[in-house]
Image 1: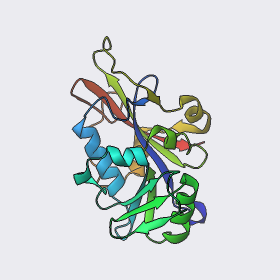
Image 2: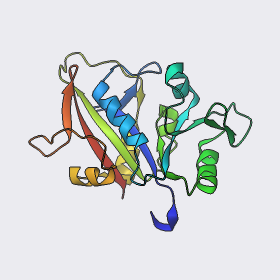
Image 3: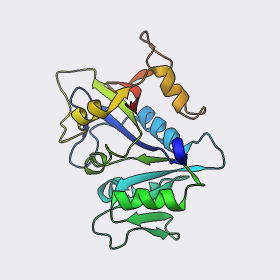
Length: 211
């Protein structure tokens, strides 16, 4: 990116067509292949000397089972208005706490420029809706239920209108170029999209860049 800015990337799985991203603070599906993609994308880097940061709200952090947090090999940043400080690096817990998304991004940019390749925002809904003006890219897994008669309940959604206003979907070749080489993508389908089926769902990996 111009000026050496650390790219900010929103990464989220959305149920089509309304871009549903959650229900009662969790996901109504468990898709191991999609979770593997998320782990690889947020962990792997193109520059082996750098790592990525993952930013999440407090509720998203608490939704991760304790044995899996902090998410390994990534700088974990938790934001909450209940935190008193702008930015505190808790080295004992291997996490960073910040009282706002803006403060978190500013401090990562100022203090970890040489160490970070990308900053991934991983949820939840309130945090996603704060980043449309600051994010450079979106990695969106578009999910469809194969049995459309029984859609899973959703109560949290990505703002599709704002996404379409500021970002445009890229072709699959651009997605592959954007991702680190070791991220495992499925074979492309008849439409050259990176898609697959799992547990009654069909999903496709996509990239959106700022217009």
